[in-house]
Length: 142
Image (cartoon, rainbow, N blue to C red; front, side, top):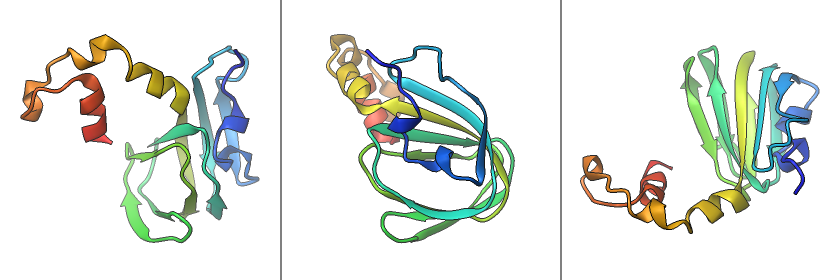
């Protein structure tokens, strides 16, 4: 199997205003792609990607506008803020200032495979008010 790479992402990392410092390229990771980068302000629309995207803000605060085929939500995101975007979904983003980030891309195919493992449905999560498995917990968090 081939490693997950920049072609499996939304395209943010290919923008001229985004300069990756380090990536997982060449490590042979099939289901995970990781990058750290410095991002300059931009406004762009991206098609859906076959991987889920988690962004960690290493500094801030910064204003971010985002939505799907239109900018509909504006947030002032502090240092340590997280953004999660599901696979297969278009994304419009306007970054209002300079930002250092970590991007984590997780293959949707791999994540779906995990939900089929029997141990995921056997782990009780009573602190959530219901007894569900890890897959249910992930659904509740996302």
